[in-house]
Amino acid sequence: MSTDSYTSRPVLRPLIERFGFRHLLVTTLLLVAATILLGVAAKATGSGLACEQNWPLCDAGPYNAFPANMPSFYEWFHRFVAMFAGFAIVATAVASWRLPDIDNRIAGLVVLGAVLTPIQVILGRETVTQYTMDILQLHFWTAVLIFVLFVVATVLVWESQLTATHATASLALGALSLPFHVALSPFALGDITAYGPSLQMAQYAVMLVSIAAVLVAFMIGRRQFGNGQLTALLGFTTALAFVVTFLAREAVNPAYDAVYLASTALLFVFLAISMWRTRIAANSA
Image (tube, rainbow, N blue to C red; front, side, top):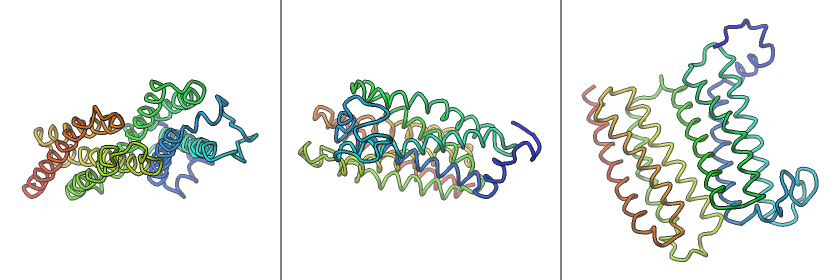
């Protein structure tokens, strides 16, 4: 970490001291989540195709300031928010590296997020110029990886104030999100044509909440309890949440309905068991 004097950072340090690195990190996390959800809406409407392989412009001149239609607007707005998310990611990475009081683990996570950002930009361009399912999947999962990195970094930066109660509450939130996860899926809707952009954004928002919830519980549990079996249980539950996320993304194909429902039910059971175990561990601590 840099230990340069205050005068070597005449702009960065005062800005971060005024706004707070923690709040900058949370703001960046929210922008990353918003970018993912807007990307889901853009995919649902086929908005990348509206730009006819044009990137970074679309169909309305510089910055696509006057979109020609709604699909073009979705794609433009997704790019617009993604631009600010990218700036925030880079700013957070620079701040974490330059400020001497930032944990090396946090700096490593956000710097890795910054390294992935140009790759994500290139993949975003390819979704417009080529629009293949493989590229769309890579684009989505790279975004999720950046989201995960910032969730973990956010937990680390706030970890001194997080307790076992927060772990239990996070697990409860994850469990409560699952019925909504299923209710918003093509399986529950019964008609794939009803699975429109708004519902897809809502389902993916629930999905991000469930991922963040289990990650928070795992990070707190790993630090608070020092129990190998409980840590392994929380780790398995976290991994299962990612499996459910993958299957939910594939659930537009009815062939995945049974395995999606089974994995979601299994995740609910493991969330309930994890809540029970964390309460016992907290009471015995």
